Image 1 (cartoon, rainbow, N blue to C red):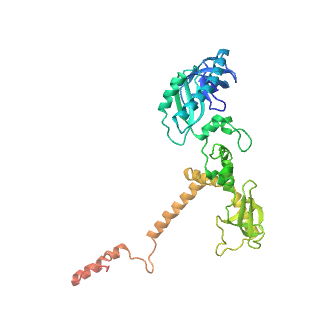
Image 2 (image 1 turned 90 degrees about the vertical axis):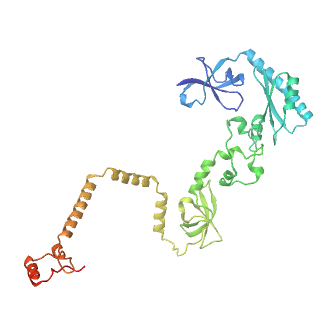
Image 3 (image 1 turned 30 degrees about the horizontal axis):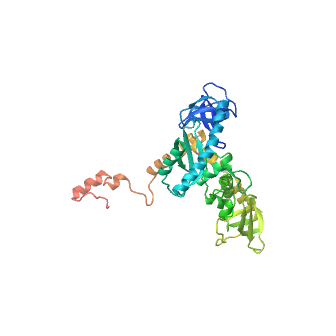
Length: 376
């Protein structure tokens, strides 16, 4: 177990673990930490606690010290410098005629480097731009190209729901979102309704995807042929959240009725047509089929487990039954070998091999004959 604190460098950004070096920190305290980019200011979001070393993905870096009032003044000074640097960079971009959109810039805590973030549809050759910026700002320059989702996370704003962007509030990492999620949730496939301000699919489509997938597994498919308490019919609509389905009965196809999923017995899933030779089961049989469908799968698992245990460790009764079966087989084999001769029974071995009474054989030899041999 190791002692750590969690810090964030930006609001809504990812949490990072640092070694407090025995100093007690509280949530909201400003700290100065050592990073790969040098000394940086961060805010403590989780006080000292112990975690397992297995959870660490990289060696812990130490906390340099608690942030002081002088550090906060230097941080505010860097924020003012960022505004002027961004204006200078926009002017230089216009002069060079580069196809790039500046998003923001950040000064390092010690002011030794400034980092510019921009978006562009393709690759940009900004080597000449970097030389001009270094001569104007007299510091190290770094330009980094980002995507439109990262741009929305940095700038912030309000979504179509009226709330601030999820990515700028609490999303630490972007989750992959696909159009299949919108289809599963029965949403309109209009791009303007399922896309965020960044132009990509909304991140909130991922939040309830697992719940919708579970509901889809329980619900009948469209155009399925089902059995209802009022007779057979075809599913014409499914409401996943209410767990109901509209069914067009064969007896009255013009007025569909709504049934709960537990009231339906699926005869054919998918594009439903009445199966050839299908006869409506009686109500008792239909109730039995529903009970079988609702039976939990663990009963089958328990039965298979019991069978495996019985095969590996047979009980005494099972061993007795097996031993009695073996004795019966052995006795049947002995009876077959020593059964008496009858009609159609094979002749004894001695008769087939030319054996029999020795006096008869001597008479044949005296007459000049040969002993009779069985015909094959």
